[in-house]
Length: 81
Image 1: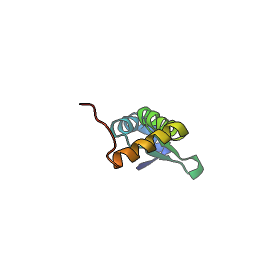
Image 2: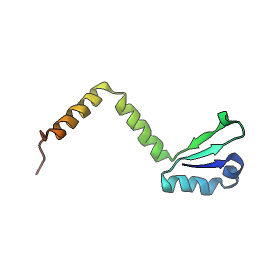
Image 3: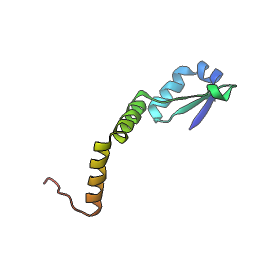
C-alpha cells in the first residue's frame, strides 16, 4: 500500500484518485499528526468490503456457507450439466 503526504495528495488529487480506481489499491494519506491519517479506497472496493461485512455478520448466511464448504471438501455436491 502506497503512502503519500497530505500536501502531495492535495496537489495531485486527480491522478491519485485515478490510480486508486485503476489499481484497486488503497492509498494512505499521511498527516503530521498520525491520528489524522486516512485511507482512500475506490467506491467499488468499499462496496465489496461492506457486502463482505454484511455477509459475515449474518449468522444464517454464514452457516449456509460453512455447510456448503464442508460439502465441497467431502465432494458431496451436485453440479448442473
